[in-house]
Amino acid sequence: MKSTKQKIIDLADELIRTRGYNAFSYADIAAQLHIKNAAIHYHFPIKADLGISVLEHEMAAMRAAWQQWAALPEDEQLQKFMHTFGIKSKEAKICLMGSLTPDYITFTAAMQEKVEQMCAEIIQWLTQVLQRGREKKRVMYEGRPYDRALLVIASLQSSLLLSRVMGAQAFGQISQQLLQDLRP
Amino acid sequence: MKSTKQKIIDLADELIRTRGYNAFSYADIAAQLHIKNAAIHYHFPIKADLGISVLEHEMAAMRAAWQQWAALPEDEQLQKFMHTFGIKSKEAKICLMGSLTPDYITFTAAMQEKVEQMCAEIIQWLTQVLQRGREKKRVMYEGRPYDRALLVIASLQSSLLLSRVMGAQAFGQISQQLLQDLRP
DNA sequence: TTTAAAACTTACTAATTAGTAAGTAAATTT
DNA sequence: AAATTTACTTACTAATTAGTAAGTTTTAAA
Image (tube, rainbow over all chains, first blue to last red; front, side):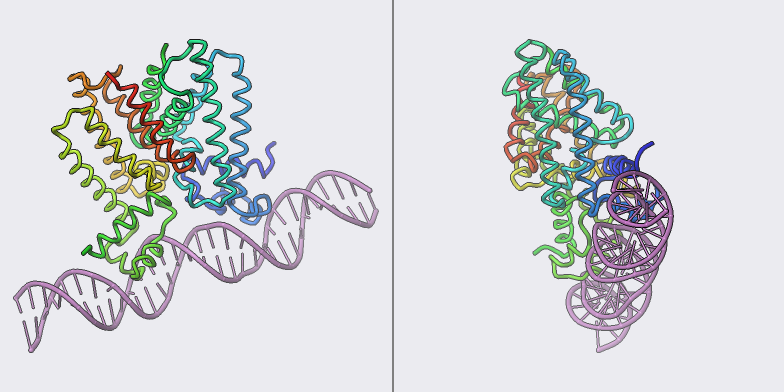
């Protein structure tokens, strides 16, 4: 049985991914969970506290997945990573980066920092996978691993944004092209 | 001398690109232009009317640019297109697609349609440039031109989003990689 | 079993939101 | 010069927003 706090985080996560951070309110959560507005404020005094908790939860889940994949060849780790985006695409959801970076300047300093940390951590992981993958000749590309990591994450992020507008097949089309460019 | 209506559209465009559609209000515009709230409602009865006008203006400007470039070789058209994103990146602004697609489901049907139209038109132009460019051997890539167009626009869109969080150099790093993959 | 801490609800507030109705001034047309 | 249209302002409203203060119930500890 999930705690109320966890239910709030999960629902906030969903609302951020579907409607956006500035387009959901405590009232939306209260109504859906059959609790009162103030109950949310008890767990998360201000909205940024909830936003930060959602980010921390997402990062914990990502780190857990990365650890599970750690022993796999780098090209397979990459495919697993892409697959998580594919799942989101089918649910008509977007990633937290895609949802939160457009509204970035409306956030509190503490939340901006969390968003920055998340982006940096994802890019760092991708950079390492791409670097080792190239060393072991599991993937191929020109230029610096960091730069390629930026391209990959940027493409995946936007593929979710575009999928909701242009149709769900957009994700597959973009990720296919992305993989093609990385084939050894 | 710009009309009040045009000033409202221009300021709304800037606010959408910096703060996001759901994070700016008629009051923000009224204060900056030293007019009253109701003056904006006179020109744009509901917020979606203003949003749609911003989109139509952007599309008109884009079509004008495309026409100017029409005689250039396709790889140069592509570089010009990327350069417009580079300018936005330096201004810490994002493209309308990047700003509006995350909030897509909170829009009215009429505005959703406009966003869809804009995305479709940009992708269509890019598809044609990439197709002709490959025929003339000015650019090279595997797969369908439409799929490659999706990848290109997705990368550019997200490069602006990431630039504000990870630093302005991100745009250059991503677009460099993008061009590398298209080199004949 | 009393105490106390945790997890809420009730009942608000002050600010902001999009949007409207009625009136006014300025420009344009007749 | 009179009539009309355009471009506003004044003065609101009803709903929603994040957030708070004080009280109540539930859970757990001493």
